[in-house]
Image 1 (cartoon, rainbow, N blue to C red):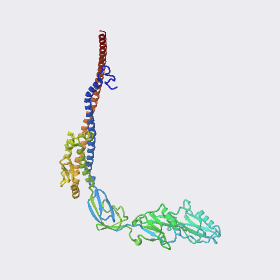
Image 2 (image 1 turned 90 degrees about the vertical axis):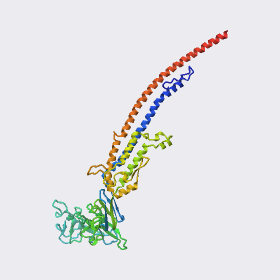
Image 3 (image 1 turned 135 degrees about the vertical axis):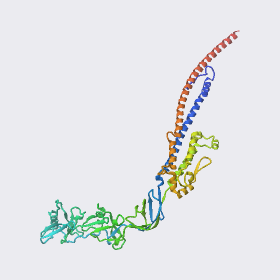
Image 4 (image 1 turned 60 degrees about the vertical axis):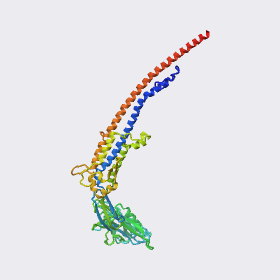
Length: 562
């Protein structure tokens, strides 16, 4: 049941008492409705103040960017022929132009073997012994086999006494167990093993127990055709880094050598490969190529393999060579050359002449200036509704309009912003305000920016544009960037005009909430009382009507009797 209503009211009296009560309440409810509408209006204002604050913050971001020295130090670099080279530049570099002539690109040193028929051909020789039984006697006299181990300048002599009638198996055992075949700590130096060559002939292979990956693991033996030692080779580079040592077993193939070189943990920076040249007789060659360009990566091989130098042959330079403004330079690489033009990194693509030009890059500065003006106009469009538009859109939903349009405080803020945009700075140049670089105030109060005029100003004197916006570090005088940024900071602060108006609206909403609650309670009590009074009236009238009917009935009865 609704407050202040009685479902059966009026049935006794026959009067429209509930309808009368509802109409009276509707009149009194109008005052509360006015307060509710006012509350809704204030809530819309609070939301719109949030939007205004967000747009002020957006303007402040542009102003802050225009106050930062770093944004005016950005550079761009261009080259007249990007097929020859590309370049990148750091910020803060003075404008300049350089003539550059790339006369040679840096190259990788490379070597190759003579051609061979198939990758499985032998790179190192294997002994031909004619021995088909490893346990058959191979010695006929007593003699000493001398094995040299270690660096050639200071080798260790391992002398093995052989007696007549010894087999390959026995000789290998004698080598492995000899006390002479040990270092000062008792570690075995040389390993002897019985091996088969490609013709199934037996021989003794001598290899370094340590694995043969160091300069002191070289083995040599002479005078015994059935004994063959691993071949120790070193591959290094001209930069003086530690070379790679590896031992090639007797009968190692080109494929074996390539795999060992590429898999070696001490590889200094070379890549081995087998290439097919297309020759009809011996199409394959083993190649060694430096991983990096330049003279410091030139390959050294010892002892010399049967290889010829290709790139860099005859001492030809492997460095890139170029002239910059007539001065000759050499570098190890073609890429990342950053020590010739300060702040600029060069990357060579081919030989030829090109010009490198460094300029200030003011594109971001321009974007911030344009954005600042656009955001001001966006803000202004929210806070101003021209009279003709207001009349034309009189039937437009109120919620689609900014509730702050016409606000005195917002009008004052717009006026302050226009004054702020027109601030003059003593720069000592032709550019002392935004008006000098294209800003215009229109008759309708909006502002526009002539971007062609702005482009001309930036191109003609970018330093002067910087002086307009940046703080003078010598005098401490604020530039336009700081001036606008600081003013906007005040506007968006907790004591700024927006926050103050927003806080006042919230306070009024709180008071209205309390007033609406109090008025509603008072109205409910009033109509509860009136409903009870109307109910009594209905009952009283009903009683009178009943009495009237009874009296009328009695009178009618008397009249009939007469």
